[in-house]
Amino acid sequence: MESFHVERLDHFGLLASVIKDLGLIGMIDARLVPDEQEAITPGEAVAGMILNGLGFANRPLSLTPQFFANKPLDLLFREGVEAELFNRFKLGRTLDEVYAYGCDLLFSELALAVCVQEGIEQRFNHLDTTSFTLSGEYVPDSDQQAITITHGYSKDHRQDWKQAVLELMVSQDGGVPFVSKSWDGNTSDTQIFQERAKALLTTFQHSPQPRYLVADCKLYNEDNAATLQALGFITRIPHTLKLVSHVITQALRWDTWQHLDDTTRYHRIELCHYGMAQRWLVVVSQAALERAEASVNKAWQRESEAIDKQLFHLQAKRFETPETAQAALAVLAQSWRYHQVDTSSLIEHPHYACKGRPTPNTPIKAIDWQMQAQVRPDQDRIAYRKQHNACFVVGTNIDVSQLSDLEVIQAYKGQAQAEGGFRFLKDPLFFVSSLFVKKPCRIQGLLMVMTCALLVYSVTQRRLRQQLARQGETVPNQINQPTERPTLRWVFQLLEGIHRVRVTVQGKVHDLIEGLNEVQIKILRLFGEEVCRLYQISPG
Image 1 (cartoon, rainbow, N blue to C red):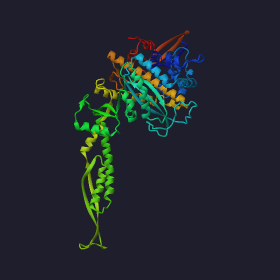
Image 2: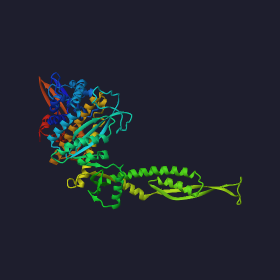
Image 3: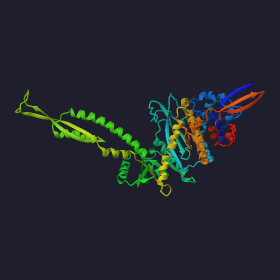
Image 4: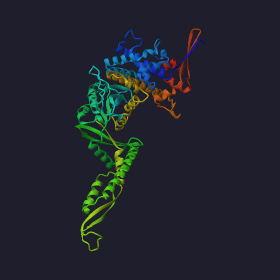
C-alpha cells in the first residue's frame, strides 16, 4: 500500500447530488458567465457556499477552504476542484456578480425553475419577513441600489445592532421558497407586504390555476385594502381593530361553534370591512386555550401583586368624606381586569377641638375616613378572558365555493412553513457568522445564497418525505421511534460517520465508502440511483 487517505462524505454527497439534479450550477453559470481564467465557475462557488452553510459548522466564508479540506471534492463537484479554490477572493467576487445580476431576480429564476421541475404546488403563497442583526459600520456602497444596513425594529430584540430585513415567500407544499428580497434595515412589514401584494396582482391574474396570498396581520390594513380586494388573500385580522374584539365576543356569546377536529372549532361571520365582502373565521383550539390560560394566570398573579400595593397606599390615606373614600376605591377597581372588591369598610378618625385626651363631651372639629378593602378574583371575567384570548380571527375575501372554511384555516396554519424557513436561516450553526462581510452589496448576495441553501434543503426534505410516504417506510427519530416525516436536519445527523477511503496500491487508486449502516443505506436508497452510485450501494 503506497498511500491511504480518508475524507468525510456524510450527507454532503446527498446534497451535492440534489444540487446537480436540480441543475443549479448550470443555471447560475448561464446567467453569471464564467471567466475562462477561473478554476471554478460562479455556479460551483455558490454550490460551495451552500454546502458550507448546510454543513452547520459555523464557519465564516473566509474559512470555506478549511471546510472543504477533508471532503472528497471530486465526488461533490468534479475532478480538478480543490479546497483552496473556494478562497475568500473568489467567493467575494461571486457575491459581487450575484449582486450585479440582481439578487432577487437570480433567486426567483432559479426557484421558479426548481418549482416547475419538482411539480411544487403554488396554490398558497406564504409571505413573511425577518431581520438579521449585523455589527460594524457598513459604509454604503457607491451603488445607490444597495440596501442600507441600519437600525430598525429588531425581531431578535437587539435594538442596539444594525440589521437587514429579508422578505420570503414560500409554498405550502414543502415550504419551498420561490421569492426572496432583501430590504433596508428600517423597512416596516406593512410597507413590504403592500409592495409585494401589488407586485403579485399581475402574476395571480395570469396564473392558469388559482393562487392565494397568505400572510400575518401586517398584510391587513386600510391602505392596502384596494390591492387586497383584487387578490385572493388569507390573513390573520389584527387584534388592534376594535371590530375583532366585538366579533370574538359575539362568537363566544352565540356559542354556535363548528368543529374542525377534536381540538379545534370555529365560528364563521360574513361581513363587509374596508369596502370588501369578507369571511371572518373565529378559531379556537385546545392548544390555544392552554396557552391563554397560562397567560391569563400570569397576568392575574401580576395584577394581584399590584393590587396589594394599591390597597396599601389607599389605606394609608385619609379622606374628608365617606363618599370620597368610596370613589377612590371605585377608581382603582375600574382598572382591575381580573379582580373585584369583596368587602370594604370605613374607619373614623375624629379630630377634636381641644388638645389632650378627649372626653365624651369633647367637641369634634372634623372626621377623616380611612378605607379598608378586601378583593377576590373575578372568576367570571377570568374565565371569559381565557376564552377570549384563546380566539384569533382569520379573514379572507375568497368565496366559500372556491375554498371551504377548513381549507382557509389549514392554509393559514401553513404560515408556519415561512416561519420555519426563517428559523432555519437564523440557526446559530448556519450562515450567521458569514454575515460579517462588510459590503452591503455582498450582504445582499449572501442573503440570496442563504435562501438558495434553504431552497436545496426544503426540496431535499420534500423528496425524502414523499418517498417515505410512497413506500410506506419510516426512519427512527431522536428517541428511536418510527416517523414518516423526519426533518432533514435530523437525517443529516443520521448520515454522520460516512467516509470515502482512497487507497493507492501499485499506482492504482481504489475508492471505498466506509461507515454505512442499515439506516443510512435505507435513507440513501430513497433518493435514487445517482445517490446510490455515489455512495457505492445497490439501488435495492
